[in-house]
Amino acid sequence: MQIQEKIPAPLSSEQEQTQGPKPVVLILIDSLMDKPLQEAIRQGRAPALAFLREKGHYFPHVVSSFPTMSVTIDSTLLTGTYADQHHVPGLSWYNEQEKRMVYYGYGPKEAMKIDQPQVLLDAIWQLNQSQLNPQTNTIHDVLADQGKDSASINAIVWRGKTEHALKIPHLIEIAAQLPEELNVTGPKLLSYAAFAQLDPNQKRHTRIWRKYGMNDEFSAQETAFLIAHDRLPPLTITYLPENDMEVHRKGPLTLEGIENADKALQTVLDAFGSWDKAVEEVRWIVMGDSAQSAVQDDRQAATIDLRSLLASYRISSISRPPQATDQIVIAANERMAYVYALDPQLSLSAVAAQLQREPRMDVIARKEGQSIVVTAGGSSKQMTYKPGGPVKDEYGQTWTISGDTSVLDMTVSKKRLTYGKYPDALARLHGAMNSHPGRYVIATVQPGYELITESSPTHIGGAAHGSLHAADSLVPLLVTGTDSRPKSLRIVDLKEWLLRLVNETD
Image (cartoon, rainbow, N blue to C red; front, side):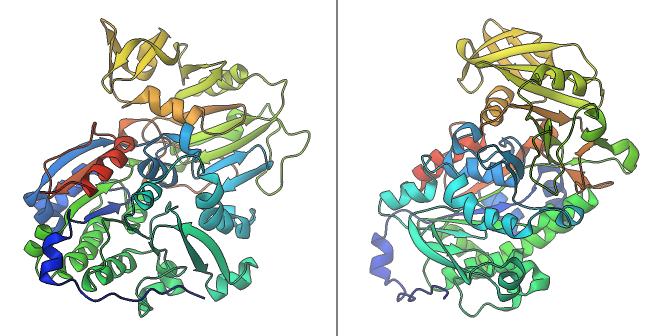
């Protein structure tokens, strides 16, 4: 059965005066980017976002995680770590221990070949309960230890310390042969589409044709419900998913998704009675998770089939577990891929060399001992690096580097490192390269292109993400109610800042 909590009485005016710091509400708009946001505001199509920007501070370029896929980024946001510590490598990856592919989502052609019940179980249970590193605390874990409540509304990653029962919609239960309920741990207030609702009367936005509640309106109504009943905890994280789909279909400059997200935000602000009251009573943070870069509209030109580049190897099919004779497994994440060498006799340098023959490939990386070797498509350039050493970057991280730093568009002068078109490249790439067990090469593709393998979804004429490039990696951040800012403009540094905000008084 679905868990419903008793609604407490509203706070008295005396209680309001002594309740401490203002609540923080973080609105995460999937694939929100600076240029279309600015244009939507200029055209008057995003009045709520315009209002919050006017009332606060705006930072157009915050560095995302890597791979630039929501599941990895949200894990970084909640844990304050890159993938080497939180252990969520991407939307798809190969689990060496279980000898199987892990998918948290799939395209229509993939759906015909993969184990869909397993995908659902990975996405709604395994991801939060076991695949997200249990030794790495989420922000919900930390707040619970401090005796503070928090809320997660439609976020993909939400692990916490309060027990909940996710109710499986009947059609999914039958089709996927899952139990009626799955027991999970999350924040005190957990809302996850039709699986867990805060508002017991919200039915309209959870229908099958509305993706069972994984939509902007559901997220907005759930957040508004907390506001209307004076139940906002110290921190609420609300995820608005639908802009991502619009950008994938129509390209990075489309405004429709931002306009719809703004309407959802208006619903939330309206719950206070006035927008001025909303900014008086709450600290607001609105941000994107990853950017997207345009994909060419010619399928043959835009897609790079990794099976063709690696045709000399025996490649595992996604429709069955890897066989003893398979040499390669490919996990494509739009504009990034993990290429796994199952054959112990197969050298990673040989796989990387095959990929280098394609000039549209971008960053190609592999591990050698404790070091990471980085090359590029259509180039003989190479550099090697590892953490610790005499070179310091703009985030205070230190490195030992040898070879041609132009591979990652970096400059080093007097032991100071400056990043170019791959922001925070060394730490982000190191995170992905050490995110999970296995022998693998990481490959990304230049802007305009997308990587595919067997039955991969594509976004021809639209947009995609996943890569290390700035075109996929820079997102805006809008803040009201505080003049403080994170240690750096990186998503990996937001957890520490959010914890400070939760305890910050005027």
